[in-house]
Image (cartoon, rainbow, N blue to C red; front, side):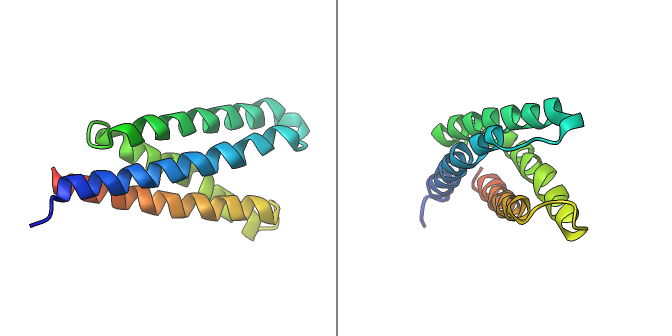
Length: 123
């Protein structure tokens, strides 16, 4: 029988590393866009918190079994942008690139959910 704990940890490690790399490439671009004027502070605070989470993903990738309890929080982090981005886009209130970013975040939310299920099953 294969070592499910080890294979689950390897899968989790890869998912979180890819998510962090994507985030470190995508999020800094937010600092170079025109933020909505009345909400500039919130826009840039969101970008900063999103960057912090990329670091969290890297920490979790080092030892996914140890940090498994944080996986549901990372799912929530992804859906908290993904769902509103697609909702605003569907109403014509957000650009296509925001919708694409939201869709990618929802894919990562699904992958994080799979990580969580695999780690729970292997425990």
